[in-house]
Length: 541
Figure (spheres, rainbow, N blue to C red):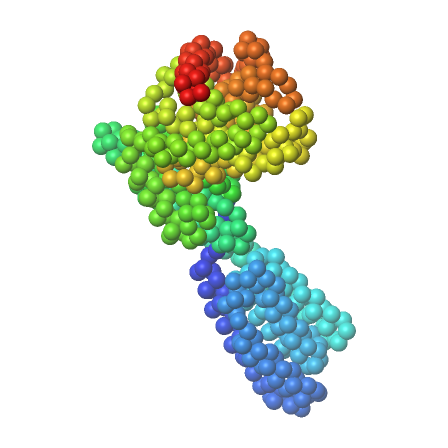
């Protein structure tokens, strides 16, 4: 079973500690009363006024603690230190009263068991042992420096105190183990082993709090199995249960240890992906769709902090709305509108004017990519989306300085690091445009290599989206066959030789072959367009 992987704030435990803190305050009053009563009852003894003064001081301490913001202290990270200091003060006060009353022989020594038992009610074994050790040392130091009991009585009391400390620590350890197991069970789905609704929502709230403090982005992904009811109806509930377990197993295989899976009910799941913005989330959704498609085709929706919401309810609503939109529109995906095409063309041309040679690179890459995809059987909306993704594949370069884009020689490592950020920025920019969500991961991964040496994530082989592999080949071919400041254009034959040389390592072999099969058609279209353009110029010249 996947580790739940996060610290759970047990609010029932917090409330219990608050109640114990209240009890300790009353015990402080009670111990002070015992001191005072004992002093009055033994007034013929020595230093009775000092004992009364100590009782008054301890009573004042209890009143002071009552004024402190105990609820805030209990919720803080330093609550253990505070209550350990409280126990040390208790032990010191009791030891002081014993010293006034004659040392280890004082009847007040019986009060040493009270702090030990109180600490054992709520705090970890090491704290119990620390308090027990402190009490034992205080008792022995009193016996040595002040005097009191005979050796046998001293030894018996010290052993009793030590055994009590060990028993309390052991019981505390058992209690903590039982509490942790109950926490795990209460927050885990019994069938699949992932988080249940309660556990996942607590994890989501914790991530929202963390993001609010640090500004770290994260993605919430809602997932709903599309055919689960039909599996239950046709094959029985046992088959349905097995499918749910298989789904969680596959989800866990494709997530990082820091990510979380929750079953919210029935066939509804949710994923929490810390540090992921929309491009990474879309890539993950595409990968999960591929993994689940054979046995458990699913609808998924994404919400990213902070762009889609800044609290858990808002993020859940957004993820659910995307999920239902995906479910309703699964079989019909709209092609880019004319407005979107015009926007993409204008943006691509703006980028082309900033690179070393403004040669309509983006338009050429889109043409090559579309021809390759058609050769591989793509059509309709999917083909239109690929053409737009290819046109926008370099849009992230808008943030790269001209000195780098127009540099006439090889880039330095620092300059290349900036270039590696371009697909990330481009995917983020395109992801903000309504309706272009499907092409975001294609742009994000357009610079990945088949052997994992590419960027931004170093994906390998078929894990890279096929559209991204197509764009990578089209981009490289156009770059090689165009003039650049650092070299002249290669011939078509030399460019294909280079593509074949890097086939399997940098480029997908099937994409290279598809381009080679379609290149004659592409160049024929280009020649026809050039003739038509020249004819128009002559008519208007």
